[in-house]
Amino acid sequence: MKLLEKKVAIITGGSRGIGKGIAEIFVENGCSVAITYNSSKAEAEKLVNKLENKECNIKAYQSNAADFNEAQNLINDVLNDFGNIDILVNNAGITKDNLLMRMGEEDFDQVLEVNLKSVFNLTKAIQRPFLKQRKGSLIHMSSIVGVKGNAGQANYAASKAGIIGFSKSIALELGSRNIRSNVVAPGFIETEMTEKLPEDVVQGWREGIPLKRGGKPYDVANACVFLASDLSNYITGQVLHVDGGMLT
Ligand code: NAP
Image (cartoon, rainbow, N blue to C red):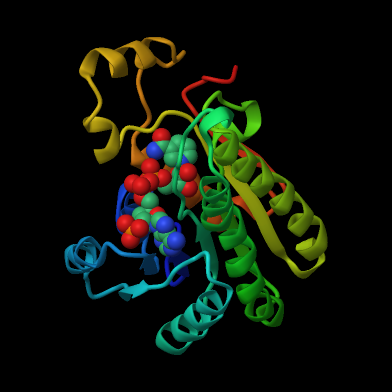
């Protein structure tokens, strides 16, 4: 029996990187998947074609997670297309790094809107269908930077710490309706983005990690499978670090 058989998930920012890894592993586990993207249409369509199979329904939607109304429309569209939704993975995120000295207001606002307000938008929009069916799993992508802070990432760290406070509050509000809310906090995950960095820099980072390697999108995705599946039915309000021991 596959862990997510007959379940339906929405994964925001599912066209690339970690979100793509989550979509791939969810489908392997029998889950139907709606992925969203903001601008990378070609990548999203390529992934849909790659994952298409007889068991699961896979579809991509252009939807700006930072826009309140677009989030409402997205949930309605996915409900029309898939019939129901069991899992929401709030994964979409961006960085606009700079020291506070050089960080503009726009860079702060944009990161907060895409990373944190999006989590409010999507969770708010899915609340009603989850309440009606008296079940649902919410998974929000934070970062160890949201737990520990990081020089040059005050905007990003604030958004990721905000996600943790939001998720714990929702876990308290909606627990009595069997709706669970958990956070995944990845450490250093190697994606297409990190492939562009000099190998000696990346190797230095790897050596500082207790497990002596960077994480892969599938490492984060496997944690999400657990939190999405019935194996975690008694787990809510938690922050699961997927960081090779970086914060130990
Ligand atoms: P990524 O490769 O840059 O992918 C980001 C995804 O989010 C893309 O699919 C992108 O789609 C989408 N996205 C961006 N803005 C959006 C918006 N306004 N509305 C909808 N979708 C939007 O990033 P990643 O490294 O996989 O990171 C995924 C999540 O994990 C983020 O929340 C990030 O903060 C978190 N994280 C990453 C790491 C790491 O080491 N990589 C570590 C800790 C936490 P478009 O291309 O269409 O914009």
